[in-house]
Structures are given as structure tokens and as C-alpha cells.
Amino acid sequence: MTTKTAPGERERALLAALGARSVVLIGMMGAGKSAVGKRLAGRLGLAFHDADAEIEAAAQKTISEIFAEEGEPFFRDKERRVIARLLDGQTPIVLATGGGAFMNEETRGNIREHGVSVWLRADFDVLMRRVRRKANRPLLKTADPEATLRGLMDLRYPVYAQADVTVHSRDVAHDVVIEEVTAALEAHLVGATA
Ligand SMILES: Nc1ncnc2c1ncn2[C@@H]1O[C@H](COP(=O)(O)OP(=O)(O)OP(=O)(O)O)[C@@H](O)[C@H]1O
Ligand SMILES: O=C(O)C1=C[C@@H](O)[C@@H](O)[C@H](O)C1
Ligand SMILES: [Mg+2]
Image (tube, rainbow, N blue to C red):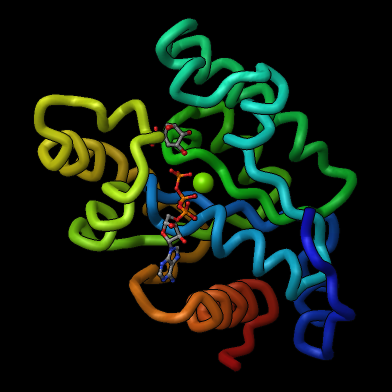
């Protein structure tokens, strides 16, 4: 659940420019999609959805359990379908995707059609520091998580770069990142630089 506050003038202008489109956050594990997305939704007065959380709720299992018991292809199929359902084109939302979601061509098409994509781009050291805190990222349960993360970044960053806007996620107050996301969306949608 998101705490909704009444949107101010800037937020209203942004919502009007968004129309039926959703704000879709993409980026690596630990980039801050869930943390920033939830707060951004509160600021805009939109509902927040987290694709990973929706998959876990539907399966009644954690993502680690799904990967271990059903395998990654099963998870990717669920992820593709959950995102298609959430981006139904009717109600704008803020959607935090899982780190691998944007690598799927069909998902990228859905996001292009029904949303504005925001890449939260973070540097390797920030991501590594953040993901070390929790052992809930099955893709990083390897002999050399640092090399795995670097490999994923090399593979994914050229694809993430197709996002409509990019914001540098780093260890500053969440509000700073949220303000930068808001400003980037304004510049993209409204043509403002505020
Ligand atoms: N601006 C920030 N400053 C400090 N810590 C942050 C910031 N943004 C996010 N974090 C922290 O980094 C960690 C990872 O963030 P989060 O879970 O939102 O990442 P994510 O992009 O959703 O990752 P995943 O793809 O694995 O779901 C969390 O502990 C979160 O509180
Ligand atoms: O980067 C990834 O591929 C993933 C990121 C997480 O959000 C989860 O979707 C899952 O752990 C896979
Ligand atoms: Mg997340």
C-alpha cells in the first residue's frame, strides 16, 4: 500500500502529461526501484505496484524459492505476464519492475506502449554494497557475486539505455532521487526543466 497525499501543481501537471501512461522503473538489483517507486507513487498520488512482490504473492513463495523450485524460465514467464497485466493501459500506476524484466522484448514493448520508462542507473560499488545486505537475489548466489554483477551490468546496460529517461541513483536521501526522477519526467513529458 502507498500513502497518498494530495498532489501539488507540479504533480498535477505531470499527471496530466502522463495521461493513461504509467511510470515504469527499471534498473539493476539494488538500484532503488522498489524504494524510490513507492515514495514516488505517494508523491504523485498514484498506486504503487512491485512486479517482484506481485509474483511472490501470486505464487505464495519468495523469489528465491521460485528460482530454486521452478527455475528461472518459469519466473521470467510469470514476470512477463504480471507486467502485462499491471500495464493494462487503463489506470496509470508507478511500477517497479524486477531487474531482468526490461530484457524481455515483449515486456519492453508493453512498457513503451503503456508507460514512460525510468532507468535508475547506479554504479557498481553502490549496487554491490546494497545487494550484500540481503541474500534474497538468487542470481547473485554464485562463487563470485562481484563478477556476476559486472557481467549482468555489461549485458543489461545497453538495453536499459533504451529507457525514456535515466536518473543517477546513488547514496543520497531518497527524496533527492525522487526529485530528480520527477524533474526528468517533466523534462521528457512537459518539456520543462524545473
Ligand atoms: N537513495 C538511496 N539511498 C540509500 N539507500 C537506498 C536508496 N535507494 C534505495 N536504497 C536502498 O538500497 C536497497 C535496495 O533498494 P531496492 O530494494 O529499492 O532496489 P530494487 O531496485 O528494487 O532491487 P531489486 O531489483 O532486487 O528488487 C534497499 O535497502 C534500499 O533501502
Ligand atoms: O536482476 C534480476 O534478474 C532480478 C532482480 C530482482 O528484482 C528479481 O526480479 C529477481 O531476483 C531477478
Ligand atoms: Mg525491488
